[in-house]
Image (tube, rainbow, N blue to C red):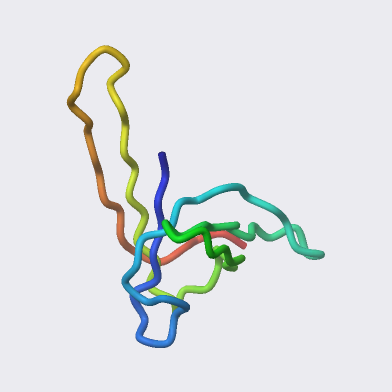
Amino acid sequence: MIYVRGTHPYAFRSGQWAHLFSIQHDEHGRDIWVVEFPDGKGDAWPSWDSAAGYEVRIQIEEPFNDQSKEAVLTGTSTTN
């Protein structure tokens, strides 16, 4: 599963991880991340918003193992 959070203090629910539910496109063809928080609240985030300070966490579940692997990526988006 892929999770994302905004780290800027003014980002919606700053610091809280949300599940990246789907990717849509705006009228200019830019990616919009449709996210859902654990309480069911959803939002749409522009992936190109470098001010939001997005962090992405990828969690891989092993199908026959109780172990999971996780990686956290930080940085600014390069999406146009």
